Image 1 (cartoon, rainbow, N blue to C red):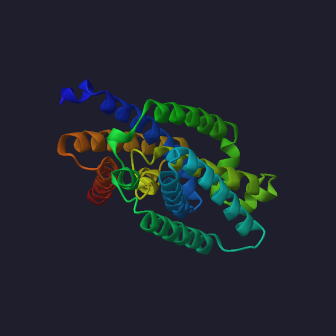
Image 2 (cartoon, rainbow, N blue to C red; image 1 turned 90 degrees about the horizontal axis):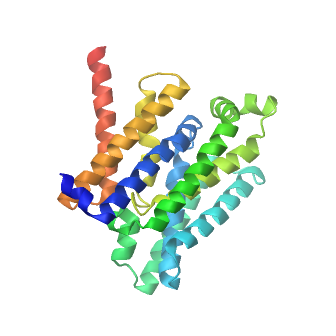
Length: 267
């Protein structure tokens, strides 16, 4: 088993995966509590659109993805607040449009290749030092951002109307939360894949909530579950040549099922 550490690409995958598995629940806990779970899936499909454009134009898919995600996030907020479109309907529409445009672009350019597949399902071979550095920078931003506005985010997650009355700038914080989710998705699809990253943000948090602990304990439980699932998934991916994203999500689901089983036995 130790031979995994002989390969530089696996070391990068383990480092990048560990960073991502810590960041995903930090953002995911607010996404789940606010019932924004569909945001991560929507932005994942938006990221796929950015990747498709990047591959077609022969420009860095990561850079294009970040740009596209930020533009669509801005559009979502305008449609949500200015035109009062229901969030779930709006996100479903954006998801469908992004997926449709991605399929059209790929079909017209005949560019459905292994590179695009790695973004769809994740690939441990795709992680570079640049991706790790970007995840570290994003991690510093996320942790600092959440630390500064932690109390406001807790109020916002539990009851947005009460938070607004209490003076919390709900619209700004909601926008920043969605932007942060988008950046996390854009920078992590190398490991998990655009079709599965939403699961990594949501499932560990849902699993941790089953313990019915306080906020901080739930957050650390979610991070622990996420790290275990990510490292286990990467090891399984390496030894059995399974897509890393699918392996990580499978372990996340397995842990969730085990927690539910434990709760049932305990009752």
